[in-house]
Length: 70
Image 1 (cartoon, rainbow, N blue to C red):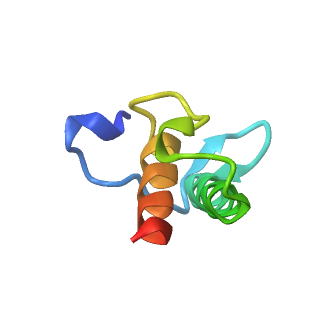
Image 2: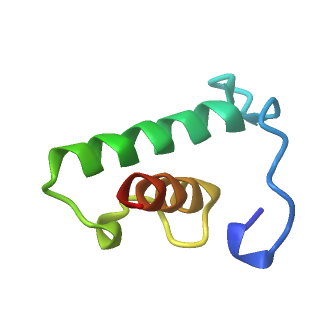
């Protein structure tokens, strides 16, 4: 799934990779936590998003950082 396609957010309870039992909800929380830490440190900007552009993690990071910066 691609966040840029305008599709609905993935089911946050769905497993991303069965080998690790990591859910989309886990990924979202990780991205949001990293964005908040980046914003709080003051050493990063919105353009420093570490996730692959077009991924849900990238969108979630971007959204959280922008919310902190608002």
